[in-house]
Length: 258
Image: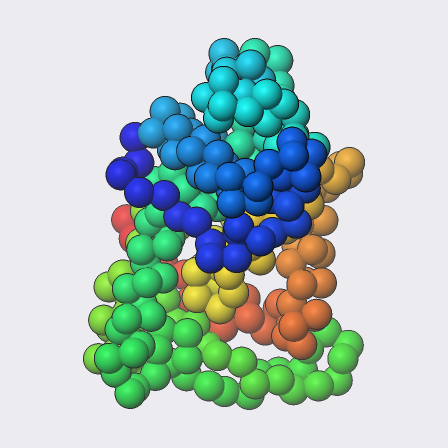
């Protein structure tokens, strides 16, 4: 039970997946979207992480009042089947306790930024960093300082008060379960990637990378995960190593005291 609301992006009603579901079932697009929301609400209220053991396609079809609805969702990748149940992919990215906390934190931080003219949590210090990996370029990035230093402005402190380390730990555990964690270096990278997903990038930047690594057939999934993150940063004109270097993890974080 994660609360009496769910997160739905404003672009969702017009996503290709919704269009495809509507077309397959000969439904009005708005009707298809409404049935999806109905199922997502049920999942939010009756599952912890989108995994529904014992639930079948037949239940989904009956609950949504649309024969073939489960199959239509499965064909667009919005429903997975496993032995003994169904799963809503990437459920924690948007809903569940972790997804909702992330959404609320983002909203509070944005509200703080709007009220203040000073720098925000993602732009407390702007500086030139060392040359990137072989590109010979020096890039300006926003230095993300996750520790409340003496130089932080009042706007920074207000924003950092909304920084939920318990939520970060929860996300880190999910990432570790999906991509593996072989060393403290892997653990540190995962923590910093989660921080970046809450400050510099969107949640999709992290969870799409996790999903890509999870599906990859490789004997070193953490390395592949890092490579996906690096590629996404490069596409945005940024250097992953520089971004990671700019994040300072509290010294007591790995002792569970942060």
